Image (cartoon, rainbow, N blue to C red; front, side, top):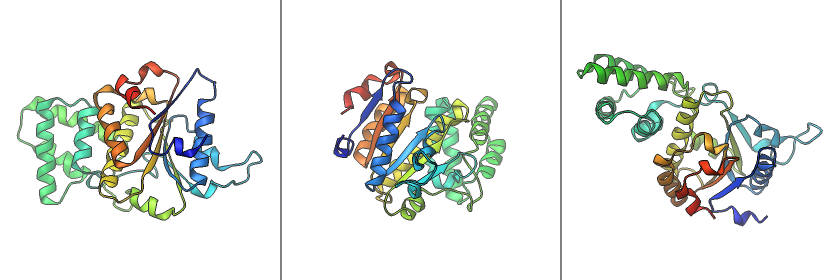
Length: 260
């Protein structure tokens, strides 16, 4: 398979369970990395780290290009870094925040941003004291606790992950493996939404190079409400996606229309 068939393309790998989908995907990831590509993998089963080892356990050509990230451990963001747009997209697309509640959330985020104190702690305190309908405040607090429970966000600047720093550190290609295997469904979708939105923002401002995205078990976090739009945006910005799934009917028709 020529790597040019992946470059700039949207691809889907599908088949029955145990038919070799992940095996093919790992081969493609390995060869892309060998040739200097930058790749992000949503690793649902925590199985991709093995691509850096030979059968005898020794290192191979891509061993030094692998960065394994575990949300809540070595992979956390400050909410200032992910930004207002990403937070609003998480609230709307993942946490199903009602319109009235979302508007109050946006007012709070704008207020904190204008004061230069957009932190998790300040967000929680502001929601508690915000003048609004009691039910709206309860709805905001529920979403706030979901953000906390994901363990993806931190107020520690030292612990905050920055994509551009990781990309700059690896000059000859990178396989960024985001392990989602032990995360509950909501937390997993928060991670996916945050990563995709931030990657698009960085590509839009030319802060990172074009990137290949491999989405394992894609049916677990694909949602028609926003992926059609996101896929279109990502291709223009330079994210070239490969979906891997054993449930092809879970992929929205709009994505099939764009597949190469």
